[in-house]
Length: 102
Length: 205
Ligand SMILES: [Zn+2]
Image (cartoon, rainbow over all chains, first blue to last red; front, top):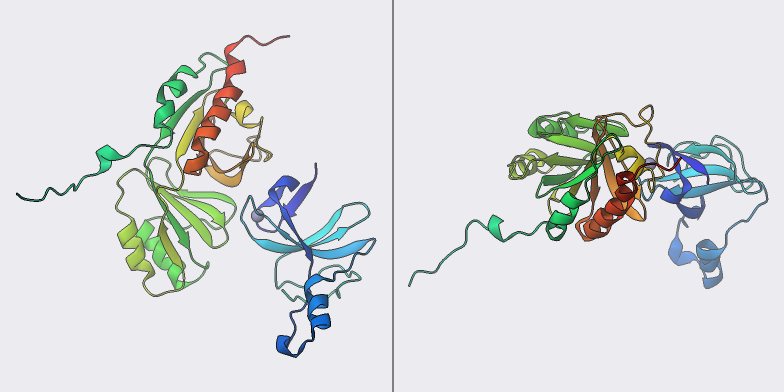
C-alpha cells in the first residue's frame, strides 16, 4: 500500500485517490478548427513513458480536489505533488519544468 | 370544517439508525476494553463554500459565530455547540444541535457574493463511538493514521471506514464521531457492531 501526499491533506492511503491520466494536456485554442484526427488525438492519445511522468490525481475520498504529481512509472515513487496553476517542479518528458498550466 | 395543518412534523421523523436502537445498546462493551455506540440524530448540518480571504468567507464566519477553519483537520467552535469542520480549502460543514436556527442567517450573510450555503441536515447522521477500544475498532477499516500524534482530539478528517466514505471527527481522547451518509448508516453501524464484538471477550494470549 502506498501513501500519496495530497497538497491540502498531507499523506493519505492510495485507496483515497483516483487517477486522472496525463497532466498538462492543453485544451485546443480553437476546437472547431480541428479535424476528427486531431480531435481524437487530443481526447484519447496520451504519452506512456518509462520514468518520470506528470499526471493528474484527485483526492476523491478526502478533500475532493484535483492536483498534479510527478511520478516515476518504473518505481511508482511520487517525486513531487503540486496544486493546479503551480509550476511543475521537476522536468518530465511530457511537460516542461515550468509551465504551470492547469 | 377547518383544514388541519401539521406545523410540527418532528414527531413523524425517523432517524437513519432508529431501527437499530436496541442493537446499539446491546452491542456496548464495558470494562477496560470497552466501547459503545450511539446515534446523535437530527443534527443541523449546513454545507458552506467560500474562497478563503473573500468577503463571503468573512461574512459566513461572522454569521456562524466561529471563524471558518483554515487547514485540514481543523474544527472551529465546540462539539456540543456550533462546530465548523474543514472539508476542503473552500469547503466547510457546520454541525450544530438539532433545531439550530443557523440557515437563515448564513444565507442572508452570503447574499449575492460567490459561494454556497446549503442545508445538508438530512445528508449524514452522526454515530458516536466511544471508549478505550474505540480507536482499535475504527483502525480495523480506516486507512488514515488515527494515532493521537497524527489525529488529536478536536480535529476531523474526510476519509473512509471500510468501503464507506465518512467524516471522522475526534471530539475527545476516546470519543469519535463518524458521519456517514444516511443511506450508509445501517451498514456502518452494523460494521462497527461487528468490529466491537471481539472486545467483549478476554484477549487470547
Ligand atoms: Zn486532500
